[in-house]
Image (cartoon, rainbow, N blue to C red; front, side, top):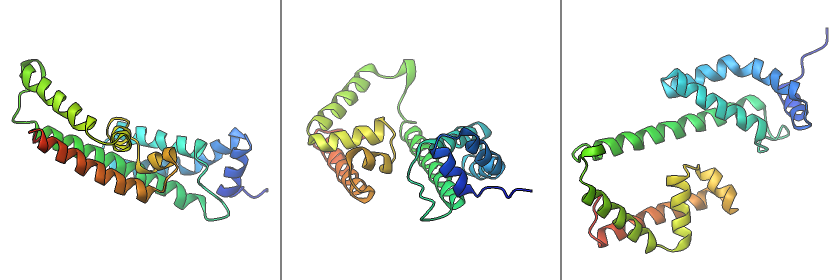
Length: 182
């Protein structure tokens, strides 16, 4: 009976275009990886979305190098990062909901206040250097990870984190200067 190929061999075969290798990886990791992601998400549908993101990384991400390590820790690191990113997004949404709880929203919102807030945000953004504007848009609007932004800009992830921190600080300062606290 032939020996099953290692995960690393399957990854190499997948990179050569053998899609059956992906099926082998899927069969080996589906149950464990999905259960792991379910713990992060707490919701089956969200876990399924995260699982799909991880599978896409397996198909497209060339960062895994079999010569530097094993596939299992890499794929679970990807899953952990996707899970943590989801948790952070949920925390931001929850904080935004709580922060906005005292303000009317939807059809009963004060359109003048909403227009004034949008104007303040645009003015604050316009007062930032173009590089800071780009970083904030990629992170906040594009919802890209630090790593994805780093890859896009050809920088180290740590550099992107510090630049984004500085950009957020400058943005908040600009909002305060124009009289918008929120």
